[in-house]
Length: 423
Image (cartoon, rainbow, N blue to C red):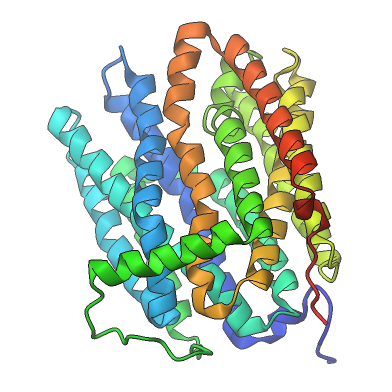
C-alpha cells in the first residue's frame, strides 16, 4: 500500500503525531462530559433563587484559571521538555478530577461545598491552560512547518468528530453512573492520554535552558513571560490577530455557546427534546470547516482565512439572534461553528509559522487567552441578561461583535495580508 507523503493526510504517517492526535481527541471527548456534568450537578444542588448565577460561575472559574495559569504555562512549555510537561499535567488532572468526583459523591451543596467545587474547577482549568499551549507548541516540532497546517486541521477534525460522540453518551453515562460516577469516569481519558504521550519518541529540537529537576523561580517566570509579551506586542500581525480573537470571542462566545442553549429553549422556545438537534448544527459547521481546511491545507493566504472566519462568525451571530424562528438558530449555529473553526485553526497555523520555536509556547499561551476572556464574560452577560432580558442584550452584542471585527480588519490590513510561506 502506497504511503501518502503529501496532502491533508500526510501528518498521519508520522508516529508521534498519531499519538498526539489521539490524546487531543480524548481531551475533546472529556470536555463536554466534565462541563455538562458540572452544570447539571450545580443545577441540582444550588438554591433555586440564584442557580443561574452559580452555573455561570463555572465558566468564570474556568476563565480565571486559564487567565491565571495561561502565561505561566506557555513559559513552562518553552523551558522544559514539552512531552514530560504534558505527562505531569495529565497526572495532576487525574487527582483533580477524582477530588471533584468525590465532592459530587458527597453531594455537598452548602457554601463550603460550592467554594471547594469552584476552587477545584479553577485549578483544573489552570492545568488545562498549561496543557493546551504545550500541545500546540509541539506540533511544528513533530511535523515541521510544511505539514503543520495539515496537522492542525486534522486536530480540528478529530476534535469535532470526538466531541459530538461524547455529547451523545454524556447523558447516558450520567443516568447510569450518577454525577460523581460520570465525572470519575473521565479520569480514564486522562489515563489514556498519559499512555499515548508516553509512547511518543518526541525530543525537543532545541536545548532547553533548564531540566525538569531544577527550580524555576518566579523571577525567571516573569522574565520569560515578559519576553513573550514583548514579542507579541512588537509583531503587528501576531498582536492584532490575538486582539481580533479576544474581541470576537469575548463578545460572541458567551451568548452563542455558554448561554446559547438558554436562548434556544427560553426565547426561541425550542422544546428540550429537540434542543440537541438544533445545537448539533454548531458541530456540523465546525466539522465541515475542519474537513475543508484539511483538504486545502497547503494554502498560504492564512490572513484571508482568519478574516473570513471572523466575519462569518460575526454575521452568523447576527443571524442567530435576529429572529425567534428555529431556522435562524440552525443557520446561525452552523455559521458560528464554521467561522470559529476557520478563525481558530488559521490563526494558530499563522502564529506557529511566524514565531520561533524557543518562544512558541509563550506566544501560544497568549493566543489561548481569548478563551479565558470568553469564559470570564459569561457572568456579566448572564447578569445583564437577567436585568435587561436576553432579547435585548444578545442582539446588541451581535452588532457590537460585527462592528468590532470590521473595524480591526479595516484599520489593520496586515492581518488580511498575512501569509505563510511553507515551501
